[in-house]
Length: 97
Image (tube, rainbow, N blue to C red; front, top):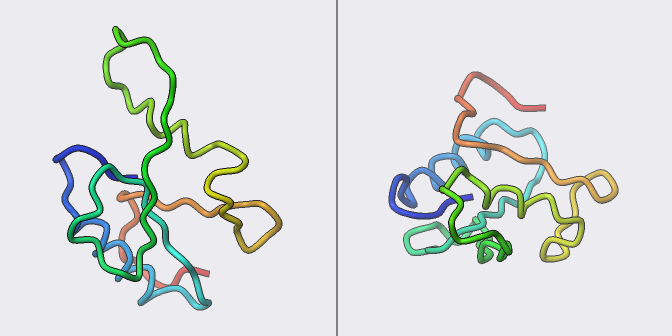
């Protein structure tokens, strides 16, 4: 998930490159974003789903809760309806299994 200007598309592209280099099976990476400019074609982008929150709440990463929807853009994981989530906190430390 990428929104705002704190992290640019290069972070999404770098994460894709790291996973692609270290994953031992085929995968599809998606990014929920408010701006897909500069994100490589190998990453499928979707708009961040809307969330009906009171306007007086401070920004506390509430948008991430939208990724828990069971019917999120009809995405499916390798095992039944599970999606595998990666964050920018993943470091290139070897093969992912």
